[in-house]
Image 1 (cartoon, rainbow, N blue to C red):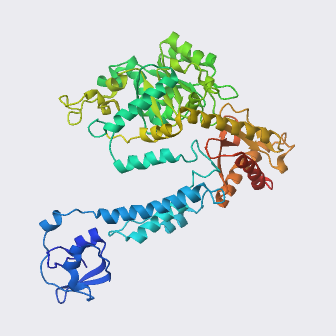
Image 2: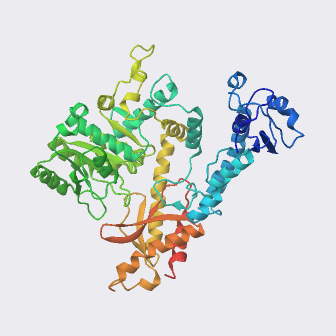
Image 3: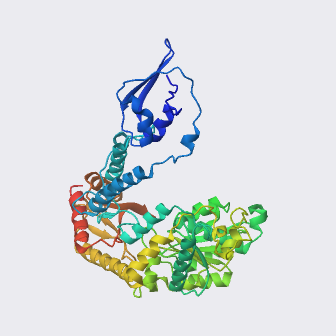
Length: 551
């Protein structure tokens, strides 16, 4: 099987198959030295192909004994893509996205997810990649299937992660970013976004209390924390950039027991070593105990390590705890240590006059990661000195504009996706006042949920929430009053996983659970979506009871 058939234009059939989706089968009759083409679907839209292949419209096959020819100049002089057809597909696909993701996906009467087991899901999606492409109606079905079987994180009853809901202005920014498809490393290819990123970073610095500084948008909080560790090491030992880790002493990092696991990843990735991350004890709320921080610093010194970084957290992943920044900053000042604040989750409180006290002392950080969009703030010019590689093919020194606008050399990436537009457009739409209202509203819904939860039998709070993370156990009737039973903790640990399985398979809502320290599995409810109402809070409590009362 195989081979090619040459028509009047000397264009191989194989090329038409790839470019214009002419679906056919071909085989060679070796006895007669004939190549047989069986046309199954003939829906060619291009006029050139109509004229070239018009003789075939009434035939079931065509034969030739001519040899294959290379692709002709006529083909290379014409675009490979049909923009009209592509734009039609995009229009139809966007209708699917609007209906399935943004209409049904935000409707409380629809499911949060359509659960399928992996084997069944793989079959439904038809994931196999084949030699030839599919037709447009098949591709649109693929779009529908992806939307149908994906989790609807925009749904009002999606409480599972530290993100939820949809902002249509931010989403428009993301659509526009993807359509423009540029990279934010030089002013010449991203003039709008270089200026825009600078403005957003400047505004965020003013929230912190900095008049000047430097920053960069990062793909996520993990990358922000990795940047901070690298910068802190570079400031303490600038020779590391040239000579590497072998030229340095053993280094020590300090972070709380409930900080994000990216601190450990960063230590491993940068050659510092996870054994050199000293975990500082926390109180019942999950906040770093500063007395223990001082003790851990002295412990590291006694072991011959050189402390260089304290990683504080504003809004821990599970309990939403805020480390006390003022006393931590005092310790860092006395010890000469870099203070990084991971506010990837809790940084939104800076928009709220009522709640920004949770980050009192934040202006004393050397670097930080703020939420909404993960970004890094640090002292001016350090990012570039630490990360620059002076690639002359990008950062020529004789450009016709201000070369300080070429910001790419301060990133560890070369190509960097534009992340500032979605935040900028949302900020433009609602203003600082609107962002403050969203933060205050989330706190109000959290208070309402906690008040209602405390009045219901079977709900036991881990502690009073400091942020919008509500952590609790649900005690089913069969376990109430049996706290002293020897198997109580073991049985309680199995409640949350079963309830989670039931809610996902029924598609009614999604909420996370986890163990923490000596505590067995408990739920972590995240109250963050701007679409939430009191009714959603009540539904959540009712649904937990419905799913768990018979356990």
